[in-house]
Image (cartoon, rainbow over all chains, first blue to last red; front, side, top):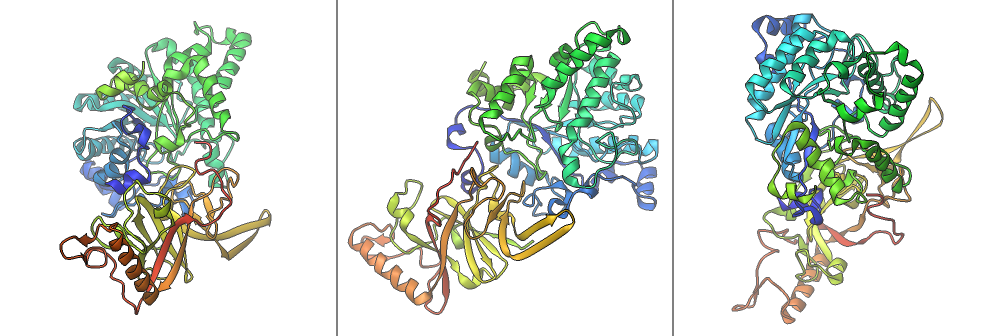
Length: 381
Length: 211
């Protein structure tokens, strides 16, 4: 509808520019419907015992109920992200998005329920996505929810979902499991992903019995938590690099989702400097740590970097690009969360058309093997 | 949160809200169109605490009734492009020191439904980044039906004489259209919310800032 286009959709210069957009981080909500996909035993468990999630959402403020935009409640009722048609209208159609990857993080919690429930929960969410979203619009793609702390079951679930549809484009786990995620405990999961050529994504996630985001204790304010999401990613990447994950699975691609990207280059320098002096401890590494990050790790953009002076954004981006990660930056909205990035307002105009084409669509297309509209492919090299 | 009423063209169909002067419409508006006034609703149709989102000259605009006074903003947050007018109207909270909070219910802000950026209701000024961002506020007023009707009638006559009205049926010289079923019928007994697209304040701030 014209009203929306005028309001927040594509600005005039991008109506026919051929700029294809892929959203690396869309959130749906089952609104409890995942239960219909559980075995009877776990449906009964839900009814009689219930989940004991230490819930991320419970820690958001009233102004940010469910961590969502105030205008994202579907007219049909249910929580934001529970109505495929409304999400399509408010996101895919409004911005003319070619694909959006569904990251349902309801089952990404870890250690808060019986093992078999955690496994069944992840399966149920995947089945819900397959039956109620992937069939609703060809632009939806989905991440495979995994019970990360049960890596053999996670590997089986990768097999199962890849067998169901090639629109399960990656696996996904939360960013705080029992151990840092490079630990060999988790390697069966990475082995399955590698074998099928799909990336493994990490998303900021909710309740975990094991660890806080901070690594040093619980925070008082939601504001604090929201500011320190990248800390989990730093611990995790160091773990992956130094455990030798990328030596074991050289083709494995890791996607850091909603974990920031402005800190990556200085962090990689730090890893290199540490390796220079402590490499005897990790003789299994054949390359400098920064090289694994450059070749094996991808980052989503949201929440965008908001610098004090507008021009500083470009300095941050340039550092990232010159380091060699320009082709590993993936645009993401985080719809329907309150800190969502709208494509044309979050990414500064100062980026060149080629940079934008890469960040908005071409990088994602190469990572997930997506076909973009013709114009997009010729739009930038 | 108050109910958000969204309407196109204030009532039904694709027509613009009733214009107090003439027939400029569409996106190719000129200075004259911007200086005109537009009847967007009956005053009683936007009760205290409610808002109405209307479309005027291709712009989505939210009109708010806060404690009996009307305020109007462009429905677009200058920070991140959100539909600003679907946000909440909130008071001001300040603290002299940690733990000592003061809530001022009288100083009101429009808070964006996404990132929560707050804009002063009376000016559109941002408290987050006043140097770079300002929400676009419009002048809005309540006028009596008699005044509105007179203005409408005078302006329509002028437009008809000057051949500018799209609503004139050339064979009958009768005026059809916006003051009938598709638009807001003007009734002298009612009060009307009248919007002007000129800026509320003269102090300019970058609308788009650091996009």
